Image 1 (tube, rainbow, N blue to C red):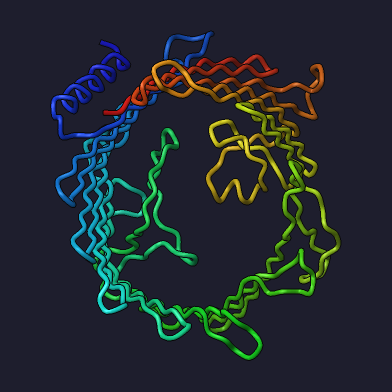
Image 2: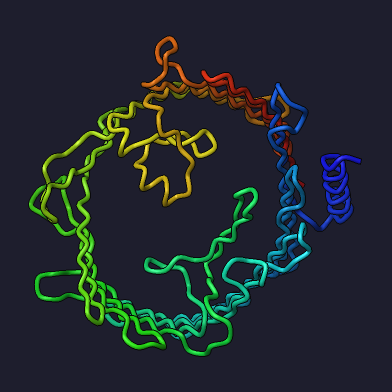
Length: 413
């Protein structure tokens, strides 16, 4: 029996088991990518199965993800609400290695205008950085116009503006799962205290945010931040952050442009810094996007005018025009050399009360030697049937000769 056959058999068994329980709600999404020059599933096979079971205010979930190389993720979750008390927990396993990978819980409640929370996480030894565990306490409330948040860390951090959560990566394939709780040590007791106060006024500065952080090693930093500082120009504002360390000082100034859409024309602009640290030499066009809305039809045209700063993301991430930094921060794959996109999307009603969509994207590359600098064609179509079934078909061909077919289906119950 081939590996693909075994995966399909396991998938069918999971679906049959879920369908046998009428109290369960679920959704199955399957996508097969076929290389015409190779065998079926030569490029990839991916299937996601989500099952929810609700009893009163308690919801349990199961998430399974399979690929052509094996059973990648198995996640179980639980969420419960009782008045102002909320609880959630998630556990992740790697079935291919029969190992525990990660678990966390969150328990929160509101009491007299104050939010209380306790958070815990555990990282398995098979994950980079593991084994590790920890928990944290969070206290948040308001006093007049000011909001305050206090987080006491015992080996774990909560994702926020200053700290990232945790991303567990399957090294062989690059697929990942992300969570907000990051256990950083193993049983070391107190590791940090963070206090943030927002919304207070200092001299002429309104809505100032101050953050104080100390770890078990001592004082780490004191940070002041304010967003949207006016400059006297309606189209320009500044976000400023000043951080003091034990023996260091760092200041970050991020200018923001405020230029709205002009009918169906959207310019993507950025400020070009000068040679000195806080100087600006020019306002540059990173790209232009034109969108035309007709009944049932959307036409988009994107031009990248500054390839070193702006890019077009891949079809899987919406073919967006965005800066390289934004694409990296959002985890978007992008085409570094594509400088033009022409897109036509058609939406309508299919049979049996479902929806129909058809998307054609044509990409162009300034370094291409083909007619009109054509680089790639990507077609995607979805047909919904009865609101519970969805069939998708896709096709891509590039100027380099790479071809790919995609066939997928999804249904919910």
